[in-house]
Length: 474
Ligand SMILES: NC(=O)c1ccc[n+]([C@@H]2O[C@H](COP(=O)([O-])OP(=O)(O)OC[C@H]3O[C@@H](n4cnc5c(N)ncnc54)[C@H](O)[C@@H]3O)[C@@H](O)[C@H]2O)c1
Ligand SMILES: O=C[C@H](O)CS(=O)(=O)O
Image (tube, rainbow, N blue to C red; front, top):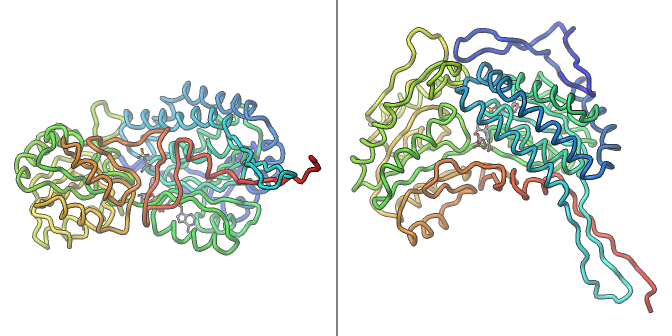
């Protein structure tokens, strides 16, 4: 663990093993921390906040950019660590490191533009100033599917705003987080500004929920855990921002560019082996073009290679663990039992004993099947057909989730009609890869609270204060 600028826990008796999901081999271990370390981290971050928050925006910019350049220099090593502990193909891991680093450079700059305002007073003897101030010590709890980007999407704006951070990465993928912390230390980011604790999740989370010095919980993960944290935060009205689960519909209208839509579905469905919060979960194709579209989609899918992410040419790596594998398998069994047809099932590497899942297309799908209601988080594409625009909008919105949705149509008026009626925070219109550092990423309904990225993302780490000044001007 990285605590107050020091590496701690190597002499611990209890360690958590890290497994390579492509080989099922132990690749490392990290000390199993808990309440004690969680409190130590807050002590360090609270002490560091006193000086870090008083630095100028430019001083923080300089240090964040040193971190940025060190990550850039070490991107291949970080990507390799990520592939070994998370499983995604090396090319995707490298892409994630650069995406993650993009948040650091974006917020290093954004920290210089935390503007206040003056407001015209109605009393001639008053002046009103508005200023924005860092919220304080931020607790960041992050998932395994994007071990680097989900950290910097929180910590970069927090530090740029003058906050300090205590981080609990996912137990499956702590090595990437610890490498990023090592580089932050090397960049000269002062002790205590950024701390990484590994170990017993709920024990660590409970300490941070109860400690009043932690002014903000920022969480990315499942909706279930998000609700737990939100309930806990209510005890002392702690600020929360939540980036939670999704159930993205992918809508193909009859006037879509079908080849473009087929390629887009490959991109949206199989990125990170289908393990992203904005992966397509449900495919809806207008019935007049369904057969043609499915043929085009399958033709693209047959080009993809499933394998170890370290191997050249791998497009789809393993799922994160056995439970993930069994979940996708059970969703297929449920759908088939309810009448679905396995239209395509790809190859998985025979010799490996990792959690490789064959990319699968199911057709003859109806909305009663679990794969249309639950987050799949795997390389399974259930395809259903629809007759009218009104029908597909109603079906797409019939979910407790509201993170991302995708629409393919070449008709301008139709694209506005549909996108404006979809209840989702992120819409890909003829675009399957909407994520970027400059956009307000987040969801409606049970997909979360708040936004990360862009100029919206730094507001999550700022308080707004106004000063009403009484004067004798007459
Ligand atoms: N909306 C987004 O931006 C986004 C991005 C990535 C992943 N996700 C979601 O995350 C989920 C997959 O990630 P996951 O399996 O790591 O999610 P998860 O909710 O199981 O775990 C997320 C993090 O929370 C920790 N955690 C678990 N229980 C906790 C508790 N009681 N108290 C404190 N911390 C606790 C875990 O150790 C991990 O670090 C999916 O649902 C996916 O949709 C959402
Ligand atoms: O899992 C969802 C993350 O937010 C990853 S990305 O932002 O979509 O790349």
